[in-house]
Length: 149
Image (tube, rainbow, N blue to C red):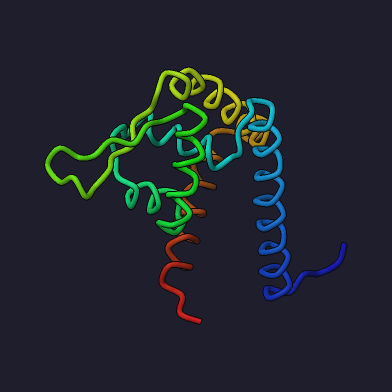
């Protein structure tokens, strides 16, 4: 068995984490393709299922994309009948985004597909280790948020 130095272990873990994230995105894309959506569109529908009536800028923030990119996705999904934009009654300059029946009808299928993916990813991992893994990922996310290159 070869000995792994701490810096090599960090590098290997970084590569492995990146590979897992890419593979998860690929499998999520494939799952959503079966539903007829892109992953970001599915996530937008899930966000609206929990926060119906949020603004463009709130959607951009939650999706971590630019407001211009959010507007493009919203327009495309509105044209497809998944959602609808409505002017805010208190401020006509602001539009709010609402799920339409077509979008609402996909929520259970989207959640099921993501649930299957997550169950497959963590298959065989005991619950106490999942709890600890979550703690470690939370710590790592905090470390990266504080990191200044």
